[in-house]
Image (cartoon, rainbow, N blue to C red; front, side, top):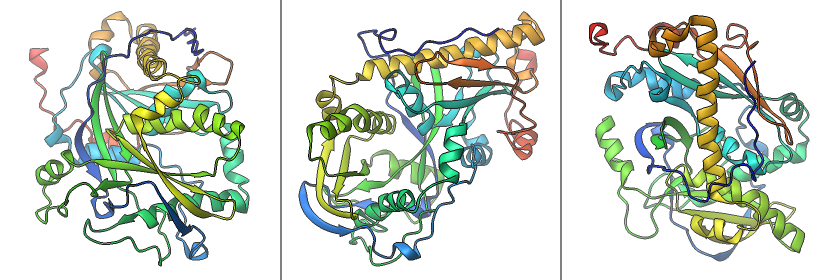
Length: 387
């Protein structure tokens, strides 16, 4: 039986922040959807988020994308990235999305939403993929028209704030295509863990100084150089805060998630559009992310979030280690790149420790598609005699 992992914040009270390297950009997905933001200031506005909402191209609520975009990126850029073939769990790279890391980091303070995460060990790498809980599936299948409208309002706000060219104004007078995304692939180290993750980005900040358009010679090296010295921003919407309870909920819940999301993507600034119940944004407010933690320190602490994230990754490796020893023998721990695909399911509910199920079957719910399993690793140079 695998050990449990307790999540209460009182257990994860290391006073110092763990070692976390500034995330490095190693790739991008959907460059044609890169956008720019010029309006970064506190001001009163009048943005109608219902404009053309009936003609919006909606993002499918039930589409199960798993790790598809990240896996396609890894295959396409395998030779350029040239990740070494790791033989032991300590050095195994962890591949996932930023949203999963945010979810895990916030777990010590979460009291409502359970989660499920599949762990895959394949060719010396660890792949983490969030799966819908029964509650999430029910919510998706029973969304009210008002809940769908709330989702579309967020996309419309971005359209009011972002333009396709750093020298142009946004054009909200067209329907939103909610399926368009631009993502960056980062790598970083959290203590002993090397992580590679994709993060959807809102736009490049271009209000401080002139920002050139993306280079016309769009080789990976040129685009990576272009992106690496740009400052991105995060855009959010929230209902107007009128009462003390709303203020407390804002600081307890929203700021925590906003801070984690932004910190993981090198984002220093969030712009929030405060709206009324009819979808009219009347105020823009700028939040430096360093201020989010200060204003919310009564409710959550960054060091607790990231120390728990570090503990979680260590726990994942420990669970895999126990499974490898049980199924393949202890010597296999030094040759994890040669092992067949191994999988686990981690499940958590508020008030409970994280539990591990070894009954997860990758064939019934494949996280890694067959094209990835058949092709990933072929271009790696691996001198087996040197190992």
